[in-house]
Image (cartoon, helix red, strand yellow):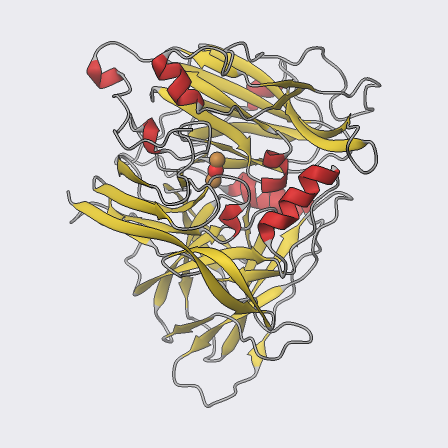
Length: 534
Ligand code: C2O
């Protein structure tokens, strides 16, 4: 295995989109940022140098970070931010994963423009468990604001109001043909008739679940979140923020130009920008200006499309890549997740939006929890995160009268190598909503899911303990639940949060603290000497 060195210079860069130019935070002047290419087993060393006025951290989303928790990246969870003029070297090894992941800033809303692909190829001479593609293409989906994104979130947090919606979705940084702006053309994927391509699709949008479709073509999903799946043939992909999907595309239609379209999914009254953004698949050898074949997108509230797509995913579970679903459970948690309103004297309407897990709105500490844990610094966090809500209620039914959440910086503590089951129950506070929930430092298996309230007597009977999909981010359906299982084999502090950035900002987050096991191979090593200080 190799060691791969990267240098990430965080700088301000002028970028023109939707016919307007603004200065954005980028890595090395690129939007989307530079990809990281490596093979399974390789070590990746990235020196991040902060040359902007903002505090920066970078998270390697989905990278297991086995015993390298200091390199995980969420601000104030595993590290203090890299301040202006400072640098930090992230050093980690890619173990037991192949596919596509993403890196992104993990502080405030900087990930709007600070993100890029992580491509993990199999070890040399190890083939894919699917036919070798002719070529591979990274496709990053994003969101674009005409205004300054940090201003958008800072205003929202001060006023207590929801932040402004984005102005466009992007495919590899390009919004595609936009109303009132003829200059922009969309991303184009050139293909050869008869050939098969591996698309490495990443949803790097801040707040939007997305549908992805290519006119007249089917896709075969083979990997999600860097975990192989049984091949699934589909005409549409659903992808939530933070999720990645590898899919095969065969250019098997009449030579032509076919629309690639993305559109948002939102099955409640929560506003979402309703635009369809497009690019194109273009067969080689066409005459100039071919007509584009368009595709119809599902309505934004197409819950059944999302359900049947997500339910169809299964881990590959082959001899070479067996599923390792925990069967005996040491910790069984029931976590309600939702958004609500708290009183706020300084806010515009006297209230502010909050997110909560088991009625606790997570408050970011001012020093990193992992540091506090490692050095035994008191007063930063407590390890009494409750495994159950304060009181049972009809989670997806009528809202209890006392909806106010409690503030806290609490973690749930588990022993090294213990097995954890978490039932994530969506609630109907304010508006029920789909929550793509991400766990750091681990993959988990989604053994069950359903609508309404989880039934602890009945629902476990239909859990899939054979080949459930394995991933690092999974949607908790609107007014529904999922049950996930993981092995806590990674000592450190691991964030769990809704990957809709607006909900993270509102406090829909918590962390697991996985204690050291016995001896150096089961313990978190000391931090690197350049770990930033708060
Ligand atoms: Cu991709 Cu904690 O995030």
